[in-house]
Structures are given as structure tokens and as C-alpha cells.
Image 1 (cartoon, rainbow over the protein chains, first blue to last red):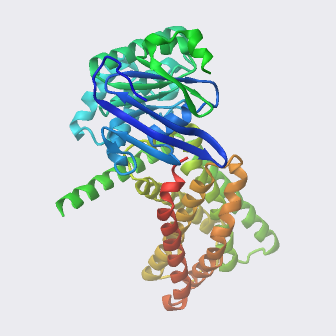
Image 2: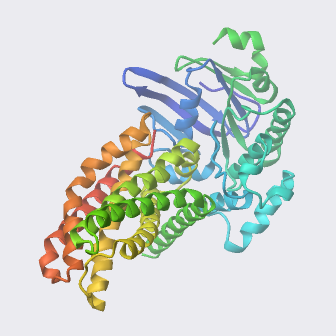
Image 3: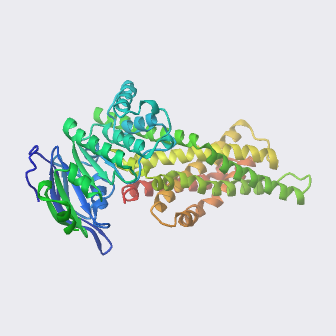
Length: 241
Length: 241
């Protein structure tokens, strides 16, 4: 399934008949869709529809039982490490070490992706922290930060290695109204300024309607609807759940 | 050739990065280590007091001394195992490692060395403390015998226990009843090496020739190699959902 989302025509991610089976249960059942470069794809669905499983498979946390995933024309199975270099993932659980400072966490993750030289870390991290108004907290442990600030650090963590695709699983959970709006703005700016492709799984239909270019609705592990945002309103989206 | 060398260097850097992070993180939670040490010290104190009550003025036989100290070390390993994968999985940070472009074998090897460092540190304090409190009837060992005891009697078994601990920790992290599964899995894995470790320590502390302890040394080394091979072979499966 694919359509023109009026952005770049280059397909960045291709899922072809992807299934994930746990015993007799299909968490995902022959899912096929394409995502073009520089777009925001919103994934919605009821609990247990397969949103998290799909994000886990795309991020490399889990492997599909069958099917093929191509990212930048590279097969996930054969180019696992190269593909992971292109992806930044935010999961419902934080990837940050609570006892380490913002600086130590970001330095650790940028070292894992081997993107900067030794003398560049400090400058880059301070630059990111400054952009996200976290400069005063950079040497404080993560456990001292509020939920909204932690989410900002998570965003920096996934941006620090210059990825092409961001995979976000319920990034708005636990955030208040202002923090949600701030995160929406950050994501929209990232798509616009950094040409990023963002895949976002959430329960918040209104957020998806606000920022995504296309909406993929999952129902019991299958694609119930995949269409541009313009074709979908809230009631229509809910009717596919 | 050059490419292989640079890949080895980068793997070594990643290994060092993960290990450094684990040590830093542990230092920030130093109370956990203190509680393990306290458990060990109290256990040694209870053992010695019980022995001295019955055998007033008689130094503790090496057999009892060695059995006492290794029993405590085996229990200490359970505490450390929780820190390796179980805790990281519960907090969600393990997913941060597995979604990064780092080979699973590097993650596992760094965890083995982290476990080894932690266990060695605890052993060092416990053994010194127990020598002081229990006053075992050891022979006067010369430098070479003392070096052999440290290297073969302590370092080799500690390395083996670290490999076993990492394997069990990784195997049990997905289980819902981890606290029950962890010791249950560890028991059959370390059972074959408990007797050789104790026998080797007794022989080395009695100043016997190394050739007389060769069987135990080979058995422990073979066990460590076997467990490490299993860990490497199943690494992909162990660290994915």
C-alpha cells in the first residue's frame, strides 16, 4: 500500500507482508506499506492492535516471523547495523539511565553510534541542550528532571546520531497539555528543518490528525486503513478501530 | 586487513563504552554494593562466631574456611546477576542498547567483564575480611603459591561464575517471575563447578603442587569456555524480544 503524500517521492521504508506470531497468536498479520522520505506517519489502533509490535520490529528490538523490511533500499536482516544507524527510537519506557547526568547519557549514546570525534562530544551535546533549553540541567542526573524535561532529553538522544527515521511509541504518555504541544511543535520542526521521516504510534487521534501526513490504522494485527490525513476525520478514524 | 583492524578497534571502543557506563552507573548506586558487602560480612561473622563457640582457640580448618567463603560468593552472585540484565530490562535501558548498532556479543561480553569486576571487588573484601576474622589454618605460602592461588583459585572461578551469571541473567530477564527463575536456573549451571572450585582452593591453600590440581583447573576452564560458547551462540535470541 502506498500513495503520494506530496513530499519527496523517495520511499524510505518498505514493509512487505510482515507478520509477527507468538504461538498461535498473530500480533501482526501480513502488513504491507511504504513510507516516503520526509513525512510523518501516524499509527493508531485500539489496545493490542499491534502498534508497539510494529515499532519494535522497525526499531530492531524484535524480528518479524515472516516478511521483508527495506530501509533506504537495504534489507533489515542483512544490514542490521547500518540500518540501526539510520533510526532513532523512543519507546514507552525511557532509555535513559536515571543515575547518570544528561551529558553522560547523551555522550554514552553518541559513542554507541560512533558519530563524533572525541573533542566534538561536549560541543555537540551543549549545542543540543541549548536548543532544547536544558543548558542549566546538563550535569544533573536524569532522576532530578520532570517528565517533560526527560522527554526532551529523549528527543535529543535520538537526534544526536543524525538519524533519517524517528520511531516514536506513545511519546506523549505522561505529558501534560503544554508538554504535548511543545513536543508536537518539536516534531513538526524536525520534519521541516531536518528532513526527517517520523513514524508515530499513539492513542491520541487528535495529535495524529494535527501533525501526520498519513494515518495507518491497525486492527487486530492487520491494516484496517492506510490513507492521507486529508481523507480522515476523527469519527472516520475511530470507525476503523 | 586494515578494514578488519578498524572494525576490531571500533568493537573494542564500544565494549569499553558500555563497560565504563555500567561501572559509572554502579558507583552512583553504591548503596547496592554496600548491601551485598554487608550481607557477606555478616555471613562470615556468623560462620566464624558459630565455629569459635564450639572450637575455642582452634583455628578454622581450610576445608571449612574455603567452603564458607565460596558459599557466600555463590549467593553474592545472585545479587549481581540482577544488576546485569534484569534491572536494565525492567528500567527499559536494555532496549536502548539493543536498538543501537552494537553487536549483541559486545553487549554480552561487556556484561561478563562488568560482572567479573564487581564480583572480584566483593571477593577481595570478603576474602581479606574472612582471613582476618576466621583465621584459617593455612600453610605459609610463598609468592608463587600465593600468585597461583589468586590467579587459579580466585580469578579463574570468578571468571567462570561471571559467564554463568551473565548467561542466567540474560535467560531469565524475560520471565515474569524473575526472582524465582534466577536462582533456579543458576543452580544446575554452577552445580558442576562448586566441588572443583572448593577442592582447587583447598589444594592451593595447602600449598600442594599445581599438577595435583590440574583436573580441577581444566574442568573449571572447560566449563567457562563451554558457557561462553553457549552465550555467544544464543546471543541473538537472548537479546531480542
